[in-house]
Length: 164
Image (cartoon, rainbow, N blue to C red; front, side):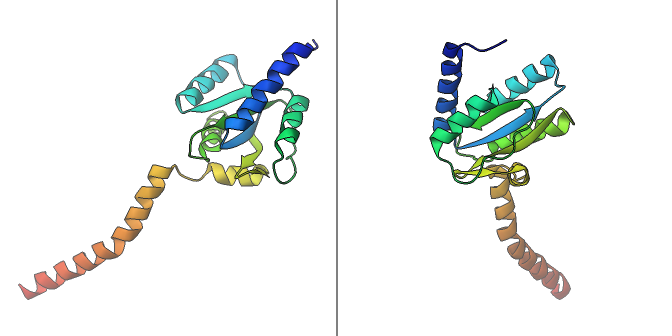
């Protein structure tokens, strides 16, 4: 069934709004995903501050052309959804979808996205999706800084034990 012009305008407005507020976005391919799984995924994404919207590719391409991102739009086969977030963590949309893609093997996949104002292909957006969240990165950084100090303390303790 064809979409009316009013509905197309509403979808285009929604996409313009999405690209306007998005710090980063991911294009998601989905097939054979049950309604229950889709609803559960949408609910969890919303709790995490990630928005999910299904749109026609032609309308999506028009909205992308109006934004002027760098690079070429990645190939977008099959059914398509847009996932974005206005949060400061620009890895959040890709990481959230990547978690669900591992849960629903074959039914959900990252096709590409927009990261740091430029288009990203499937490989780059998948690499972005595997970056840990900011609190985990901070913990890893503190661990790296603490490691030499901890080694020194352990060595001094061993010397103290030998002297005693």
